[in-house]
Image (cartoon, rainbow, N blue to C red; front, top):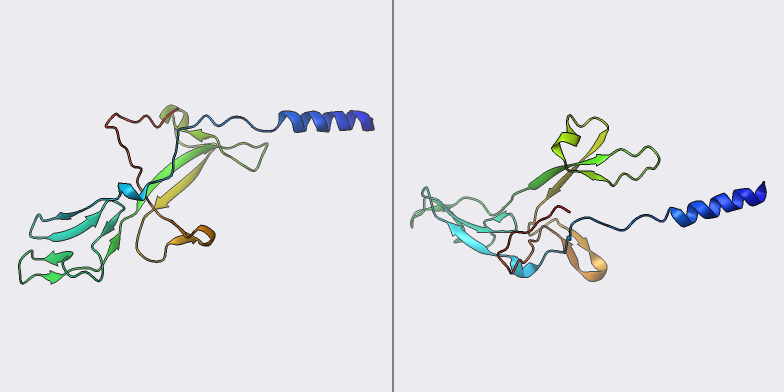
Length: 154
């Protein structure tokens, strides 16, 4: 009986080592992809970056209304939030649910699925940092060299 228990335990350890990741290629963002510009419509002068940050402090020429010499600075900075809801299959055999459901027909009303909400931004202060490597955990875009469409679904 003891020998059978060991064989079952060993078999389950050998065959339960997971499976190969088959999801999309998800590289880290590249700081070189950051861009900036100015919006000058509707009598507003507003500096923006494509990392979700509007305006900048202490610069004085970044957010002004009205957009003329008499305009006053509107804001010192705003961090926009980018969010998404992801559905994950509920696996009763484990505490780690990691199978993402992306088919709208399978999602239906969401019953039997966990909902995971992602919310990211990039702002100049109060951001998460990984101290050993001095890495800011922020919203950084990918640097895409080619203009070909990128398929993010497997």
